[in-house]
Image (cartoon, rainbow, N blue to C red; front, side):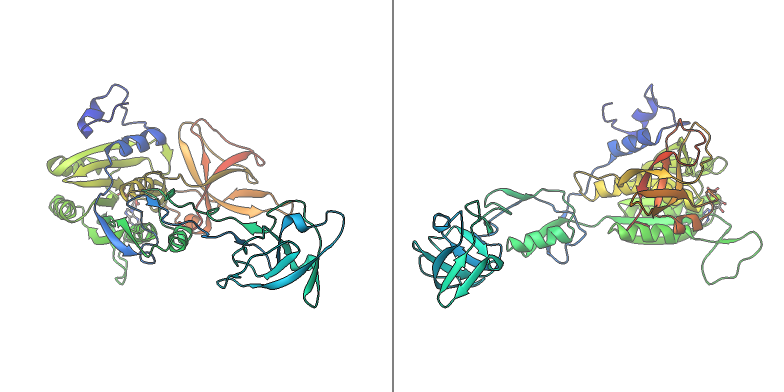
Amino acid sequence: MDTPKSLRDLSAADDYDPNSMPVETARSHIRSFLEPVTAVERLNIRAALGRVLAHEVISPVNVPQHDNSAMDGYAVRFDDLKQDGEATLKVIGTAFAGKPFAGNVGPGQAVRIMTGAVIPQGSDTVIQQERAKTSGAKVAVAPVTKKGTNTRNAGEDLRQGEPALKRGQPLRPAEIGLLASLGIGEISVYRKLRVAFFSTGDELVPLGSPLGAGQIYDSNRYTIYGMLTRLGCDVLDMGVIRDDPEAVQRAFDEAAQSADVLITSGGVSVGEADYVKQILDRVGEVLFWKIAMKPGRPLAYGRIGRAHFFGLPGNPVAVMVTFYQFVRDALLYLQGQVTVAPLPSLKVTCTSAIKKAPGRTEFQRGILTRATDGQWTVRATGDQGSGILSSMSQADCFIVLPTEAGNLPAGAVVEVQLLEGLI
Ligand code: AMP
Ligand code: MG
């Protein structure tokens, strides 16, 4: 499919069916409208943790700079070793990490060497100290079969002039350390995404107020806050907006001016969607989809001004499931990540029987356990209703059941997506 220029082009396409859209199709439609941020800022590498690298990093040096020892022991000439017994060599000095031995190792000679010390000139192999016996200025060393044993080569980690990190790489502890190993203390990263969010619903009560009849506390703004913060976004919490067209319109206008992305919860299900649609048709372009998934059937995606808009369902579990299946991926891409890794997934045996009707992809909440034989198994958390937020708190994975799957007996192999570090 060619990238549609506007959302209207997409809705006119032959294969476009907003009423039963597979998860993958919705994800790729969304992706086709996303343009990553381009503005960059220069940061100290520690402050850059969790950000996305804005340019390729070419290694300015070899890491390590010199051939060096991987062990405490003796630096020797391989040719001096006796393959059928010990060779006795004269110890002519010591090489410390950061304090090289200045001389040359000649035939019949050895240098005491510490891990990380530069391999002295003339030597090529290190015999670990457990395989060496000293007596006075002499050392008897056992043989090794390969020249270069227990040495590390200059440039074996990173080679001068070669790419060390790619543009679009998220900076994790390993990358921060790698930059430090190159002597790089400052780096350019893409600016943070500014993400606004609000809840809709007359039944919602802010924390601190007592609940009246039929009222509930607004929990979605807290899960959304948490998920966005974990993704390293700048968040703008716009509160609860009443189910009132003027208030909703004002909130959309404000978000369009101040944010890269707007996320709302509630108000996109049948019955409410029409009025949100009317408002949005005035301020932007929006598509309303019924995704073939459970939970999380209704979803809206669109543009208001330059901001991307995600209208998530109202049910608390549906909010989290649709965020992880659509919004997470989109935000990582918008942040500048060139290759967005999907949530890690694996196949495990499900120890509980699963109830499911064919027709939709289901994201049931699961708990992983390591069995005594070392294999991982999963079981469903229990009640899978889309309002049971405690199921997300108990879960450490989604059990992903494909569209065509029906009921499964205990013992079936299922795919799970890991939530560790995300929820
Ligand atoms: P809606 O999509 O607006 O029809 O909402 C679907 C369900 O989710 C209803 O039971 C709402 O009360 C509930 N809901 C909507 N927004 C929130 C929220 N912010 N926090 C908790 N529950 C919500
Ligand atoms: Mg509502």
